[in-house]
Length: 249
Ligand SMILES: C[S@@+](CC[C@H](N)C(=O)[O-])C[C@H]1O[C@@H](n2cnc3c(N)ncnc32)[C@H](O)[C@@H]1O
Image (cartoon, rainbow, N blue to C red; front, side):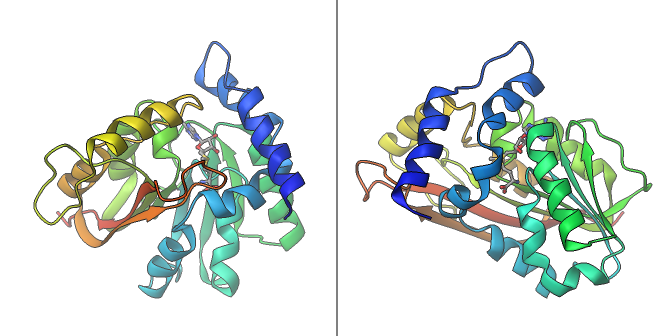
């Protein structure tokens, strides 16, 4: 992907800011103009997704499971399953933005993945066909879901005991994070939330503590990533990867 294509998508992100009276309208307005170019640019903007999928699949989360990818967008994460997708019972891409789901639907048909399906729904309230599910993932979607507490609580409800949640997203630390968790300085903690909020992305200091409180921790990683074309390449954005298990009752 070249500089020209990058500039095209960046200008769409800058000049087509989210607008509309409700969350779904804002998402469709924002993503409608970018849907077809979404994947290439986000490959460099959103790190850790392949790592999260590999961690889950390597730890047996693929065999015979029902997996819901919440806020799954264009369904690009399905590519990380490779041949493992055939071993799964069902995999669903749930999203509110029909503009992105159209791309996911086309991908699924082109790949001939008969056990994959898209669902247009709100991740905070959507009720799955199955009574309880094995895996729920959120990749860079929690920061875009206004009531992300509800999204995590809902994932907890629909997961079976021992079921797994996988999250990768941007965040900032609390001023005084728990022991063993990274602490970000004042500039990071104030600048990045303000910068991303222009696109209705809300990096939060509370995702990480809330996930640790609700689930048994299986894997946790805190990293820093360069934002493409950001004027200062040394000023990096924090992101985390979390895998947790719903405690068995
Ligand atoms: C930054 S994109 C990430 C998409 C995809 N998971 C990825 O890794 O490329 C955030 C996604 O969350 C979706 N989203 C935001 N709020 C949502 C909600 N309440 N319910 C379902 N999806 C939502 C958006 O439509 C968008 O597809």
